[in-house]
Image (tube, rainbow, N blue to C red; front, side, top):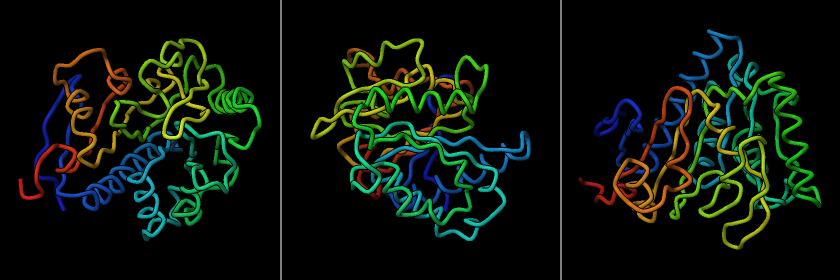
Amino acid sequence: MEPDRVKGSGSTPRLRVFPDARALVRAAAAEVLRRGRGAVRERGLFNLVLAGGNTPMALYQTLGAARSARSDLWHRTHLFWGDERAVPPEDPASNYGVAWKVGLQRLSVPAENVHRVEGESEDARRAAILYETELRSRFPGAAWPRFDLALLGLGADGHTASLFPGSDALDERERWTEVAEGGDPPRPRVTLTLPALNGADVVLFLVTGRRKTEALGRLLGLPGGELLPAQRVHPRTERLVFADHSAMGESPSA
């Protein structure tokens, strides 16, 4: 399978458009494997940030069902989360819990390489501090975490991870993690900050559905009002956007 088109270069996100969410997920799985194998060849490990949402969950299911699920790549992979709701892992709203159930448990990632947010903590601030401590132990002495690849979603309001429009968390410049509140229903969340996300070598936005069309256009450089949170993500090397026809505001036959 190949996308209908590829466009964008330089500081503009590199866009790949697919006929539907299923095709997008297959391509995203191939991209994760390609980036992971490259990182392992170069440095011996792969630091991957995971996102919540329906499309990423379909991606984790695909990765877990692939023949490569037990490959050496996953033995050398460290998993992190871009954000998490203040809920225990067994809650259907837990990004970690659902991801683990649908696919991650079938990957041969060592337990000590899974770095989740303790959403079950009664204090979201404490959970954020614990997560930042965990991250700093993985990247000792670094100004910001050096992720190889960060998977991100895009909300209809332009949020990504749990960085919502107007949130004080957008202004954080020292912490790697922060507490935010948003979503429907609104609830406390722990999120990576913008500088932490921008420490990634590559970010990959996964965008499906017509509700995302306006925000996607803004992310790709169409004029608008105040910068959306997703527009403020600028990693070290490359921004990729995988979108389906629906998110582009197009019919499947476009």
